Length: 246
Image 1 (cartoon, rainbow, N blue to C red):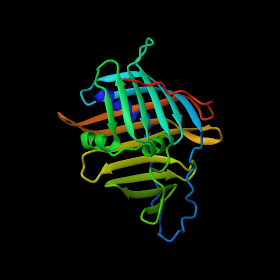
Image 2: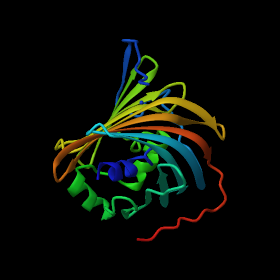
Image 3: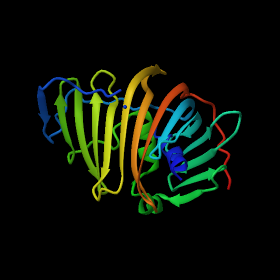
Image 4: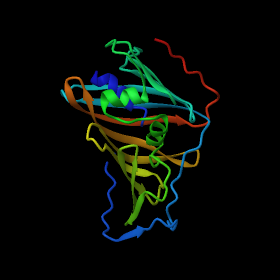
């Protein structure tokens, strides 16, 4: 189950990028947030490939490849292969649910986001998956949020639907360099660290990412570490197909 769950999180797609400066500028909730202008990746259809390493709490390490296809605000589709042309996991994430076909462990998932949260303790959505994949702030910034300038980063704290999100937004790349998300009931958490960025279609894209996950399984709390290194990204793909069935 650990490896299957980790497969879901690979599409979310941190080297830690902390600021050493102690100079802090607090931005009040009056709309005056000069200099804070995160870059949001624009695309219609996108295809991408990555190398992945999954480290489970048991100590088991799995290496493989990830193929991803996406239609903005509509669907994320992915296949994970351990090598030798074998397909291990195929997944489809839409606005309504998460569907995973596990061809090895036979532990399929077909859940709405509310059902997923009740089981695993993590609150997810298609919007969250997209924003974590592109190193965007997890939610649109509004007056309820706290935004602080610390050296070469903006520190953004947001609370939505009983989840607290803390993001560091790099002032040079204008992308999230680090994200920490915790459910207020402490059932689940996600840490994402974006180590390197490369230019894709004139915009920065996070090419090397480390995810640390804490979640619930019937046998108790679990932790998984996932390292993703993207090898190709095409944000201008022609309309793509998203084949999936149980």
